[in-house]
Amino acid sequence: MRLFRHLVSWALALFLVAMFVQATIHPLPNPPEGLVKFFDPPGENIVFQTIATKSGISLYEPAGRVAVGLIELMAALFLFLPMTRRFGAFLSAGVLGGAVAMHLSPWLGREIPVSLDPKTTATDGGMLFMLAIVMLVCSLLLMVVHPGRSERN
Image (cartoon, rainbow, N blue to C red; front, top):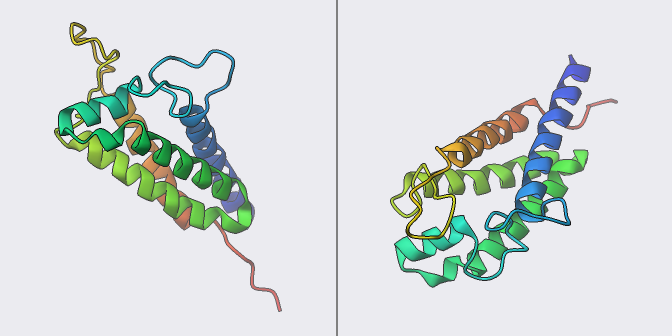
């Protein structure tokens, strides 16, 4: 049973790490425009610029975007190391809980635009919202599944 918990823990952690790295630094050299936290020019990240525009709080873009990206990378590092994995899961759940809350707020919505062009009405169909929910569930599950230290005398 302990081996199964270790395997599930690693699978969940690696999934979350991959998703966080993909969202913050994306495999270079050609990251998609408007979707990578660390490489988008100020004012061009679709999610954070949408929040800044609809809320009227300009601090979301770029300062909020960079802060969230740093926290996501810290969570990824903690998730990758087995001795800090549970803390990483808590940190990850906090970030993703905030993401789900923003998607449920009128500032972002469940469906985000695919472009910052006001003429474009196309949305992602709620895919980013669903990814945030799946990642939140994985983080919460990881808190429970991760075996922690064995008690040997």
